[in-house]
Length: 257
Image (cartoon, rainbow, N blue to C red):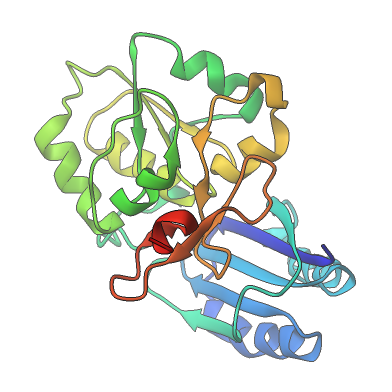
């Protein structure tokens, strides 16, 4: 496997985000990098893939901006670039909660790294929430995690309003694929009055990249938004395809029936 896939995001004040679009697109196109980069005033969000030397150059280029100097990313490998083309898009939000007033740059919950995550989610006083969409949860999740059964992240605030209360649920831990949705979710929940709010730093991908197999509590595979559809516990392409009529993930043995 010689194609490197990197996923990264950072909530950071980027008032000049529109000016970064063309230089980033040109840089990636010149090196055969494909995928998507989202830019907004609140930050940057991306999953891109290409030959390793090109990807290392991209990371160096991004971090040459002092505001992105501490950018953290997740790595996985595959045989082919799992994207058709390179897109750099300007957005109101780099992950759409539908509430632009919720800005993680103003404050988020407590980051919990992969090594400490197991202890947190095994605490009986902690409510664990999977902030991803329902079809993602069906592919894999952590044991005992609540599934909000949302079709999009925009529906998460309604789930909180209807099911959670700061007084009854004093400790809440959340996770998502790469960390961006659960981080923004913590900003929202702090605004709603929740006090002890935690989120998995780097998301499921960093957890799978970091935790030893003997300590891994992840169950199933992890849905990803590219042609791999899912990755397994070793971050290798998994056993799912997209069902053509519905566009939802489906195990290959089920698709062949």
